[in-house]
Image 1 (spheres, rainbow, N blue to C red):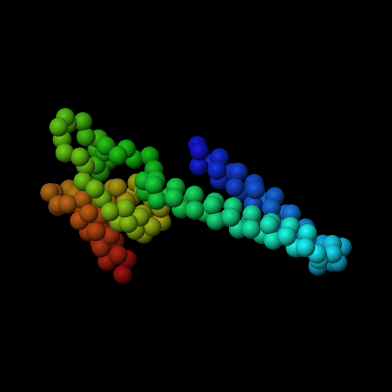
Image 2: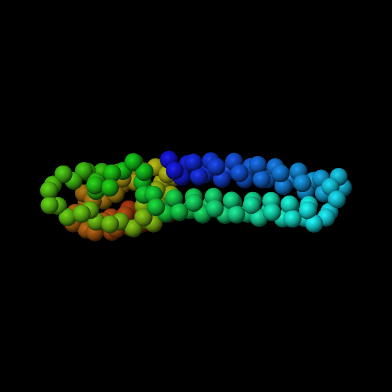
Length: 146
């Protein structure tokens, strides 16, 4: 929720600042505002405010994307869609997020298809590392598309 408030507020400030900046520059170009120290500093400050808010907005978005899991809605306690309820079980093996993203991109964003294909490879080759299943699925998909 906090990120949405930051994004909304920054977007609103960008919009207002952009309107003001556009108005001031248009008035300067049309000659209705004289170019003096006051209008120069005002225009310069609007440009600085616009740049800072723009940078902060996209920095926050980039930070949010790097912290969020690549598969929203998938519980971190599940491996391959199966929830692990076994006590004293080892933590799920870590998966390289770039492999998840690459497979999902190859499947045009279809997360369910990615899970189905990986689970199929897991059934064919049990006991392999998690990254291997995703790499194998990507390689099979790329090979089949050629």
